Amino acid sequence: MTVRLDGESLTPEDVAAVARDDEPVAVPDEAREKVRTARERVEEVVESGEPVYGVNTGFGELVDERIPREDIERLQLNLVRSHAAGAGRELGREEVRAMMLGRVNALVKGYSGVREAVIDQLVSMLNDGIHPVVKSRGSLGASGDLAPLAHLALVLIGEGQADVESGDENRRLPGDEALAAAELDPLTLKAKEGIALINGTQLSAGLAALAVVDAERAIRAADVAGALTTEVTMGTTASSDQSIAAIRPHQGHAESARNVKRLTEDSEIVESHRNCDRVQDAYSLRCLPQVHGAVRDAVRHLREAVEVELNSATDNPLIFDADETDPRASGTENAAVLSGGNFHGDPLALPLDYLTNAITELAAISERRVDRMVNPNIQEEYLPAFLTEKSGLRSGYMIAQYTAAALLNENRATGRPSMDNTPVSGNQEDHVSMSAQSAYDARSAVSNAITIVGIELLCGAQAADFIQEDLDHGVGTAAAYETVRNVVPHLGDDRAIHHDIEDADALVWSGLLEERVEDALGGQLA
Image (cartoon, rainbow, N blue to C red):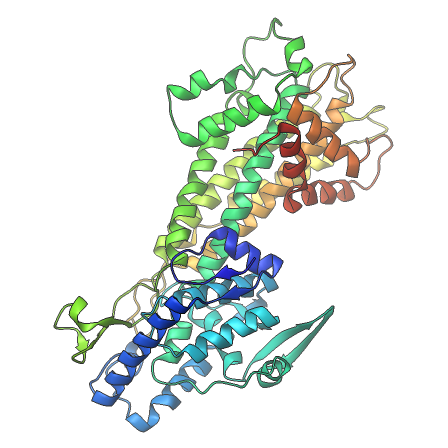
């Protein structure tokens, strides 16, 4: 499919499709018309000579410095060069593509005042596999993701470096050579274009979009793993009854409860102990719908924020029709230029930190279920210590739980960047959001949680092998068990189980686990 960038309809799934699967992008005519109109307004302001921030003044603390007309292009060039001051690791391929995509979609809303040539350059780079080398550190999330976006913008003007893909070959070239490889010429930035390229939340928003897609996958996989664990620990699924959810009607609770019931439908294992003498299960089993559901609702909150942000104009200043704004705005008879704070990343930073907290809870309850399967002090009597025959001589999956605990600790130790603030630019920019760091932390937390869920799947499949009676799993849990066993054999003699962990992790990341389970269920998981 071709992803249409109209400034109105970009979704997290679109971001993942372009960033990871290289789906092509295109800008429709109606969006191009908005771009042309905004550019005409900028040209009118330049001709008028009126002092307007970002057009013919300095930036940040230097806002009161007037720039002569003959230096306006030099101003934009200097802006991009000076702000490419990042440090740390380089952004990965999908991170760069997500940021580029978001930048195009924000510009085509028609409030930034760039020429179509700028839009076309970015679209061509995405479609032709030209990926700027971008340093990851340097953004404060206000004024947007300045430093990373400046590294991206360098390549548009033929500077910096870019990775250029051609077939299976990937070459790192100087910016001008990278453009030439796609038969593109470096741009000469005109008035307002430099600041429009670097001032915005597109790194934060792009990473947040990927985090939403991955976190939702993690939750569905955790429902699958939790349902399998419930079976093999002889737990009850009565706690997932919809009558319980109905009288505390949080949406996420109902969705996870419904998943557990569907996954364990027709389970002879669950049915076999319906009348046992256990009164209640441990919280990690009994409260699965409530905990997983609360995480679902947190991710839903982030999704709502991301969908707004992806389709917003977030640079500064913004260009409007003079008739639509306060008559005291700077500009001309037809163009109003308003300076504001749409670049501030708090609308993303706060829900991203919320996601980090929430996904850590998902990891925590999954790790506790792992412990219930491997721990000889609390596991079911038919399960051998650490899920291995001849325990003592063998360690089985003992250290897999250590790994889960270590990853969980990493999540718990992660800071909450949105709570921090370091004033910059001579204290003109005296409150910043740290949204980019919030996005990095959220993605790391999601990745760790997925690995922990993968470990739970491994242990669930291993525990299932020790159920003595010839009892069938549920419709969905049977598919989950078989999917794990297709890539990870039963653990007999000890082996280097990091391979097992990597393979289970890949089942979740690739979507194969979800696909196989949904095929068995005949429909999608919630």
